[in-house]
Figure 1 (cartoon, rainbow over the protein chains, first blue to last red):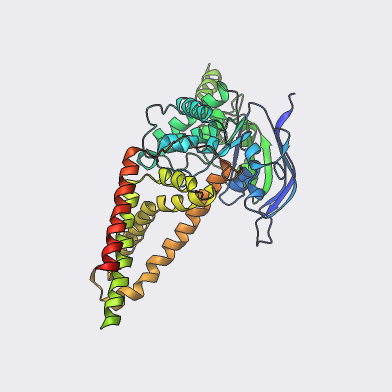
Figure 2 (figure 1 turned 135 degrees about the vertical axis):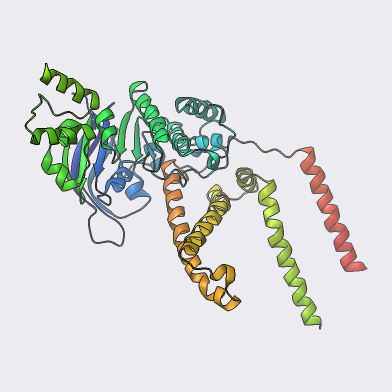
Length: 283
Length: 157
């Protein structure tokens, strides 16, 4: 087993001016090149967790944090945010608020400019990042003139210019239409497969978790409810009920069939898989 | 009489300033304004905070429109049909959600800027280069002459 790129040990966190811990006793680790989905009810602490991974909490937002979070061997509580941002990039939920310059190219270059890199290097990186997210030719556009999917891809490109090893995406598709969602997932898939990046994605969309994630982490009221493969998690009735997760359509269809007495070899989470298993059963 | 005139003059001066502001933001790109301010010696954190705030004005306008539409949908038509004093009392219903929205938004923008290492280094690079060209010198000379002439007339005529 390779060494984990993210290690979270006994993590507790509460926001400033609050007495309640929003995250309690969280422990998990992620290996290089993995796709981890984080899911759970609204207000369960998913966004807080993704900001903790990137070091913004507690460094920029304060609050009380116990335990430790190690990203690429760096302690997120102590390491300089400039150094951390080159290891772990973050894309936020709202496509509007995370773009704040007047040109796509400036937006993408912003992070690298803050690092004080040489101008030629920044331009090279920004061009590369726009190519990765398939937005070449959009350099001079105003970010507000783009579609939701394009805005989120600009946000991904903006994180990419810092050349991180890990990309955290906090519900990147929750405000997008189906086409925008597909665009974003295509790019994320490529980041993982072609560039070997580790992906952490906060999402509610079970179909996408089933299709893309290697592991799922379920948070319920600030506590880690379970950590496992999508198949393990979606087939666990207790967890599903407790954390209010929706399961993929094919899985809920199977549960209905199971009630009627049709038992398949495995618990299906992908449509193709369901078809294969049913065909197998019939023949 | 003199007091009244003095008041009017001050009033017009302020009005000129306020009316000229949109002209600046329409003709100068916000990013270039920030770089310009930095070149004039302003710390880049302050320059960017100021210009990012300018950048948020259009989205604030949009937010105000959304709030007003939502109010109209619930038959709240004071801003269209009401009398002045009614409008005055109705403003908190518009301003409070707007301010809360703006505060939330600016916090999110702050997070997005933190995530991209804003303010982590003492100096930063700018990919946009602004230079003082002949045009700038020409307009500077023109402005200085104008100020000179006006001052002369003010003082000696």
